[in-house]
Length: 567
Image 1 (cartoon, helix red, strand yellow):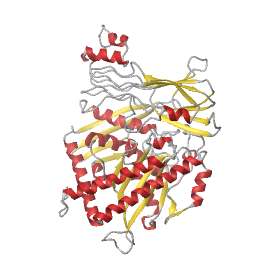
Image 2 (tube, rainbow, N blue to C red; image 1 turned 180 degrees about the vertical axis):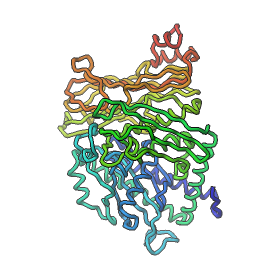
Image 3 (cartoon, rainbow, N blue to C red; image 1 turned 120 degrees about the horizontal axis):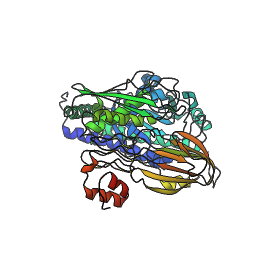
Image 4 (spheres, helix red, strand yellow; image 1 turned 90 degrees about the vertical axis):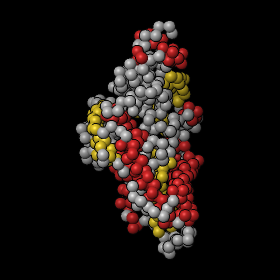
């Protein structure tokens, strides 16, 4: 770690706290002003602050798989626009998937922050000085893709929505009316989308004000020196954690159901290496790009690796660019994990499976440090149609909860959001029912869904959806054919299943599909449980009895698997 004399630790910590508070205030602004429930309820966003060299300074909690994803987008956006063409008051929009590290509906907005020229601070120069960037990405509900809601069967990126490579929506403080109108006329839900656009701009303006306040209070030089110390400290913390982990190289393979077009399973492979130089993640051996929209932009692949790396090294620290210095990520260009134009990229459940695939590889070298597989998927669903009360078009979504895998020390959590989402939330039933043609007849723990073991996997749920109006139902799941993996003699768990029209001659299992529904139709979603850890015979009988009483384990399974007969 580089020595940085002349700056005491207390000042560094105060500056760090101010920067984190600025990011948190950006988050509050976005949640309070967004129009779209997937933003203000689900927390499907990523918010970050950067220094003048576009290095991450602070993030606010949001969707975990956006961890560092803004970094890639910001760098690509600056390259496209040109740093020399950035002006005070600019706001740039980017959603081109291969640069944006996400699909086309995850709109990234960023703004340069300039200090000086009357903006305050004793050391402010005569001309505005670029001191940093503020950035926010959030999921929009419609931007002119070929289908309303999610796009499940696209074959190239031009079917997936209107694309912005790095476009100034505000130029030197002036709203570009023509660009906003282009967005408005390319959306089936223009009020929501334009409302969320302005909410994101409000988020950026909040971050800009707070960053200028911090510089005004401490001075540019002190803030920059403190940030450099933060980077050094973050890197050292990550390297210290890596030094305590087993060194070696491990490879894992898993399978995704399909690409949304064909029924062929898709191979996922990763090799993770820990050595004296760092933590290296290589997705070579995975499938080449496929026809359907499950191809992952490389920036999104990097973000997936960051989730696993951060959780393993410094899970209790707020991240910055320094924490990620020991991490390297690679994937062959043109492969599933490094999509290039014009590959379809909309349904990015590949990334959810990738996080768990990294853990599967690492578990070979440190089974006592890692959990068994979770339910392995993010069971998503959506309904689109005309609202039964108003007749207005709607599209509303939810990602359901699953069970987490057990560890050597405790049972798996659940039902809970997938580990690639963590603090993200499900859409409340009240919101789903009020804004759609869905009614929920059942929401309960799915008995026997968690894998048995000395420590039991967490449970999934069962959700019964009855439709009260006509429309389309979209199911988005990608791991229904293979069971989540267990550890140390534990049992695999039950994967997710989605059944449309059960008990009728139309009954069918769904993976990632769009189906027409009518009033009175039923869909049953049963989400995956977490896998078990350790021999089930070693589980304490009292724990098994408690599981039966709570509905996690059936009496039959208690007798057959655990050998506990008095239940």
